[in-house]
Image (cartoon, rainbow, N blue to C red; front, side):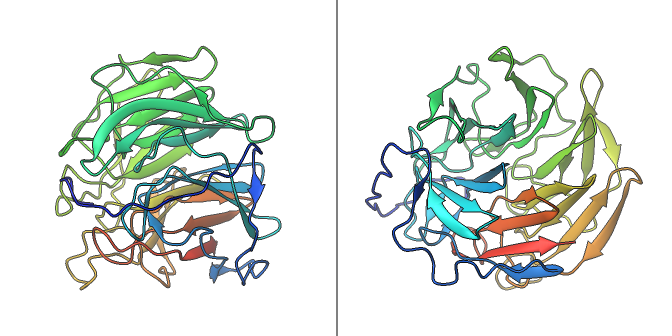
Length: 332
């Protein structure tokens, strides 16, 4: 994504009311058409149409797609909810503020949004909220990120009750900052080992007691990385086997101790600038494998794993802006 101001069109989005999750009046025509795989299969498209630079989380069999840009380049405050059991979409309560490139994680049945980028200027904000879909009808305000640590597009993962955020984007610059939010004490920690180099638009996940930071870039689409770094609480960042394809703007999900990395941008060999690669990191063996590529190459989407499948809704089919509503599922 470009890190400069753009002129965006505005759209009016209807509120979904007081229910924690509101069903859509008209489910997508292909609702219920999900396949179990293996490999890549189609699923019902995003409920509200094209969206990119979203974030995702998974709780109790549902995939939550948060914020982003729509196809008209308006910033979204919407929460779209995909039920993996019924293969249908609904809407959750709107965010307190429209954001994109949000930092999202789920812990103990609660979804956390910890900082993001806002507006057409990609302004880094520290606003933080949480929501428990099973019991709450609205988002709860949390302590904002400490001054000077605000950012979006960070690599995020939960180890126990602590959510770690590594790197991220502030203004036009990637940062090497690492911070953590303790969900048990509702406090922030900033005295953590920084990344060896600034990184934004990477992805990763937690395997065992370690957070893995994979790929990303150092502030520009062209400056993509293939490096893999691992951090366990109380330790330092350690290098691991490099990803076969250097890229940023990817999506990741963890299934059975393996981190699946899909899509991305910065592909000079493709007119679209987008990667189709699906590669998996086997943490226990510190090695990579190449898998079936994405049928529709995308970047700028989140992904979430549930019940052995990786759900990849939305994203863009060309470098920078080019949002689509495509939703596909990968089953190893």
